[in-house]
Image (cartoon, rainbow, N blue to C red):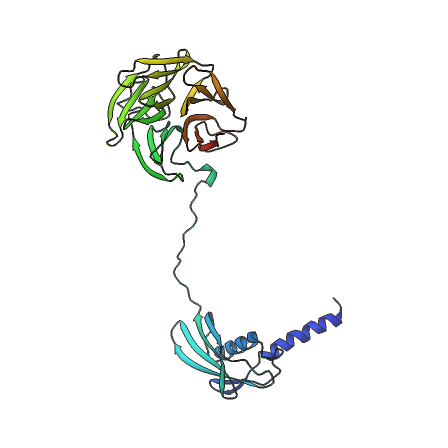
Length: 356
């Protein structure tokens, strides 16, 4: 930078310093009679700075600004000097308070209340950040969502890892949670004021409980008391994943062979059955069709309930969810993605697909 530019900067800086230089007339009275900054009226920033200097000049202590409140009452006349009258409100051990009035033509054009604080060691109101996991490492409350069922504007979800049932509202907020006697819980449906659960038997996801039998059951719970009312063996003697209530009857997935079975829930007599070329998991009724998810072939297929013919198919992309439980609400197909962690999603997921 050349000398000429440096000289201009020095001149500007000196001009600022000149405007901050006040003449002391008395112990608490100061005056500025230099060239005021501004065009038609005095620049407000100049008045604030000068008032602060006047207040600070009345203190002998080594203090710093604590708070400041300023009010512009009238426009400052640019070609007239400004008087600054300081009122020493209070001098404490740590805090010092002043009010300042800026005066022109015997009228107050500006007032300021300012507080100063002497430096001192105080209490520490913070603690060191603890060593905690980041957001991606945190577990959700539902660790492995599997079966799910919409009922009375609430979403019932069974956690396959804990065998607890979570009740969520329409925004995903947990309303309630309760434990069950399920073992490796999978499907869930609600009908006739009962909660029906698919209990798959032996699990390594949680510690052994005395109520565990290591046998696959379909469990019937009272929806109000949540007590176990009865449990039934699966129709084919194998594991069971999906359940779906259908006008007083109960659809069940089967594996010996893979099929969908419709039973009477009172005695579990088979009413209808059709074999499918899927590894069946979740079930959801839509009109005369029933959707069934397949986590092996990664698809969701809609069958005709009367004859088992395929009506529609949704293929899941490789980077999409691993579909388990299903439920339909307002033409939206909801699914649970219980397989995690994986390279794509290090967290469980409950999502939805809009049906045509």
